[in-house]
Length: 284
Length: 270
Image 1 (cartoon, rainbow over the protein chains, first blue to last red):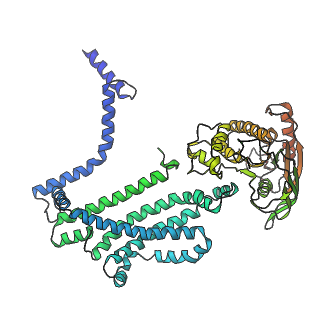
Image 2 (image 1 turned 90 degrees about the vertical axis):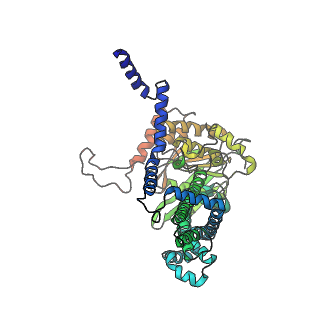
Image 3 (image 1 turned 60 degrees about the vertical axis):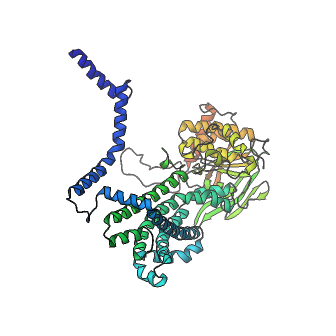
């Protein structure tokens, strides 16, 4: 009997090594993998569970912080009535339009000052000076200039989003390996081909960093811009709910911002993974 | 300009360097350098570091302009970059965002892209066409750079210490590869190297640059393919190396103050 037990123990030890055959080893491996995947979620799930329990027991007033289930319920109601999608769409369009304007302009000017010396001398120091003015400090001026309609919000977002993309594009172009450019010239590439095949791809990783920064800034500035005054959008939804003490909808708004921010970052990562797949740092 | 794979190469260029001066501000790198290279010859330039051998190569390539004198390729003055000249640099200078085949096809007209695959096969990388350069070893990258240089069927190939960063075994393999491709195509080759053994292994003539001038022009009459351990090979190598080391360098290093170092100080031969 003891001999069999000892054999079983030995077998269990052997099975713990990856090469050992047997169902026991496979199960152990799966368990380890599942553990690695699920463990990061343990703390947030515990927090949510504690939160729900506290709200249910009445330790946490619903006015201070509604229960997670209430938040989900509110989100569901909004989604059903279609309100959620309208507001999300309005906010997203605002943000992306601002990104297109500010980011597009930043890209163009960055390419210009990065490539041409005279443009750099002319424009760069001015742009750097303007960069140091925080966009949010401009809000009173913006309201004076643009009023409180869409153009004010677009202006704020565009101005904030412009600088990371401009700066990173400029540096990306300037830091392209001159050895590669020299090689390209000796292999008979025309100026346009040099730009397309060597300079732009070389600057791309920097430009994408600028894009990620800008995407993050975009949402933050949108939140602030939507609190100035809005008739629609997630900010309007949140402020309206605050007026009526609907804290669950306020939380829905906050979570929406967080979710959209995360989506934007994931999108930027996907772009990076695809465009920079040649880079040894991005390869498996 | 034909590609290396389609038809026999139109041969090499005749290179004439006459009284070439090059100075950067107050620093004179080349003083009245004279050199004649016959079509199809393989010439190696050796010398101490900073002697001006890479500068001479860059002047021949047209990357820089000489301060004085003339450089003629087939009787025409060198004016900027030439379509018949290709350079292999010290580092492979591959575009990391293009696959190997696209790197080799750089500058080729769209109709001739098939030549890239052929040349890659000749350097032994026929199965790595779709690879990213970051995945290749140093020797493989230089082979891709060699293929890229040769795919255009150049009549003058300039090599600027291309094998310096490779290990000894890879270097010997690359010697055989370069020698074989040169013999097959017949282009004129100018190799700058600090390794005298490499110069003797590949070249018809070894030229030494000292004090900005050509100080030695040694013909290498050994049969090809060159055998590294050969007695005649070693004798020639020793003769050239002795000559290179003969004259002290322009700025000898100051006396080091630790034991074991020869009392006369150190001289640099690279």
